Length: 437
Image (cartoon, rainbow, N blue to C red; front, side):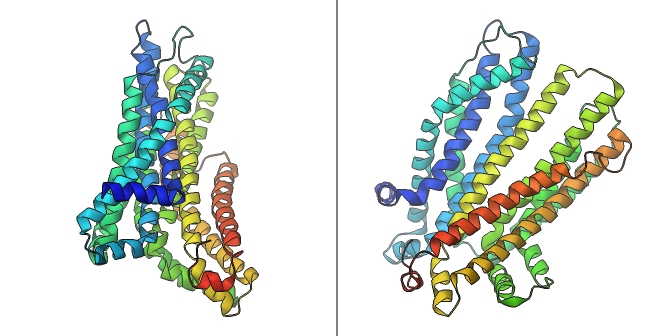
């Protein structure tokens, strides 16, 4: 099966491009920040600089690991779903589920290894640039020299390979398991995340305004609530679609298509909800914290500067990864509908009408993800603002939310419409019989 996996990659390298990109970015981010461990362990590094470097590597490295897994899992799930016919043919030819699983895992590990190796050079440069940024802000001494050692290299390669293998295994297992069993497990996890998220957010009121850990509990609460909404996204989407007052052929067809594909859209909705919740909550809470520091006239300590840098860095990483996940998932999902678009055109629909339907679907998905992501973010922002600033809502205004919404809408609508336009360039007859674009 290993040889079959290698031949599959050589014959259709374009199919694994999304996984390669996710692995490359993930390994690059992990190695960039974990190189700070190697730098902190160099002889002669003072205690304050060492603590700053270690804290940054720990926090961002943890987020990066989770995002790598989600990104690779998203691309692998779409990949396996599109190969349902191929995998069924292998089973009909005598391959066992275990052999098919080993083939898909072997493909994922090989592609992830290639991406991790390619990311070493950019990670070395990124680690140096990151150290320069810490030194320019006064958080690390100018005498500290960059280092890229075994911690960065091994962590980047190992985490990327484990994430790829685990994501591929889960994708194959998800494709062969019973829907009812999977649905029960997802529901239990979703309600558990919602309960823990609500508990974490409300526990903010037990802290005082000057506690260093004040921002942690509402931030984790917002993240857990967004995870709960994301896991329930297919069910919530179906309930929303039943109440949408859309008229016209494009609106009616968009609602029907989304209802039919609700389960397949879970990866896209998860990306949108997580992106909105984490970005909005982190940026608004950091704004409230900065305003409170400025109002008190206090000078930012090294720990405060570290926290601000980490918050902005985490949001930046999330933006990059979510955009990659969205683009990959939307591109694959739209390209997979080439036959559907061809049949619609043969039935009398014009390319403009097909694009109108696809655009309406993307608009509904964007609004859905922004709404539930915002709800999760507000659940963390309000307790933090009440305790830290003695105010119900932050005074930063809607600018942050509008910026986040613009990024989400651009990624979703832009990718969907551009991919659909490319797909529609194929002749309708060829597309209807399933020819590749």
